Length: 414
Ligand SMILES: Cc1cc2nc3c(=O)[nH]c(=O)nc-3n(C[C@H](O)[C@H](O)[C@H](O)COP(=O)(O)OP(=O)(O)OC[C@H]3O[C@@H](n4cnc5c(N)ncnc54)[C@H](O)[C@@H]3O)c2cc1C
Image 1 (cartoon, rainbow, N blue to C red):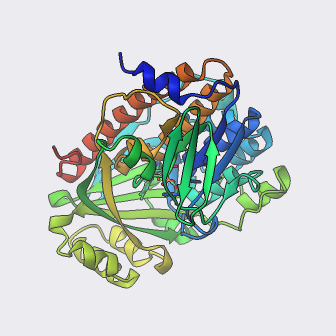
Image 2: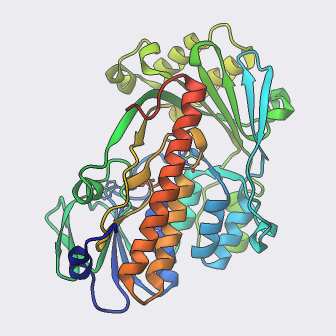
Image 3: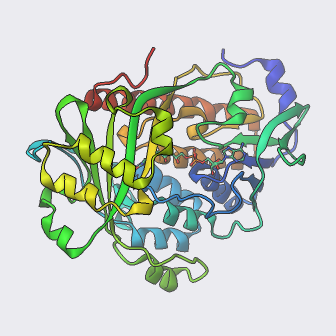
């Protein structure tokens, strides 16, 4: 028995369709909002950033079948067609190399059984995060409220009120914490749920995918992800993003209301290592300029294959930034109420399985579907949470195991 009947009965509204308050306009929160809007459910999203371009959101993302199926479910069909037209389609394989770029293995990515959507968009595709966010934001102008930092919530019988740093409030019947790894909603709802520092640091950058680079790159590297592991857990990830059709051209053809900037093909190149072997404190890492980070990584790669060093030399300067890899610690299911969570807010994971965004999208679509059933809301939310906890923490453990194997550090310490 994982629910307390008192909490359950008191916290849910009696009305058939809820008013949903979502905290966070990241991938998961926007996916949920698209699904709810499609189902005709009232929804408002509150985002702390000043606007959709406030932060560089240019990481490359690998979308797997979970992410794809979620997007197919929530997006209006013409927006899904746009997505399917543009996404890059590398070979569905993760390849391993040693520091001299000698192949060490090839891992075909698991595939879904053939589904209708398979004809339109393959199970493993890539694109830049800002392109996906732009598509997910389409049609939500009147729903997404920027510059609203949530600081907590109050629950009363049947309603929940989000409180914001600006003194304002928003009241709904269901509150969803989609506010990422530092979630304030999780901190209040599940104070025992912890996030730990994996002690892995990444330096991330992107290289323009010129025709010369295309020539120089070994053909095996036109895969979803290439993992170059050198001595002593020095790791370089190399991942091409080659759009199938130019995003701006496809938008003009399929969804003229979407403004997609001209976007070039790139190669995402990230370096990772245990923090205690980087020779730089976290404070210095955060304070370092792009050029300092490039010099640090160049020194770490000494003795490796010249192509890898060349890629780092060619990182475009504004694209270079450090990442602290953190992971949530799995917790058992909790008593369901009208405050729930999705994505990184509950099951943040290391990027080592390329799954965090896909799980956030999956959660958003699953919760929208659950809330749209229109009958017995408490059971719908409970079923959503049970499946989300099981699948989400399974991926947290898998990502940690992948990272531990590659980088020689325990990514879920304790
Ligand atoms: C370098 C790197 C590469 C990655 N590559 C992949 C990949 O290839 N595939 C993949 O599946 N995953 C990948 N991930 C993981 C993925 O980025 C995350 O799992 C995903 O973004 C989680 O989505 P989310 O919506 O849960 O949270 P987020 O995207 O973090 O969104 C949370 C939103 O909430 C807002 N917010 C936070 N606090 C508040 C508040 N108090 N009030 C209001 N708003 C708030 C934030 O500003 C943000 O907009 C990668 C991660 C990194 C770091």
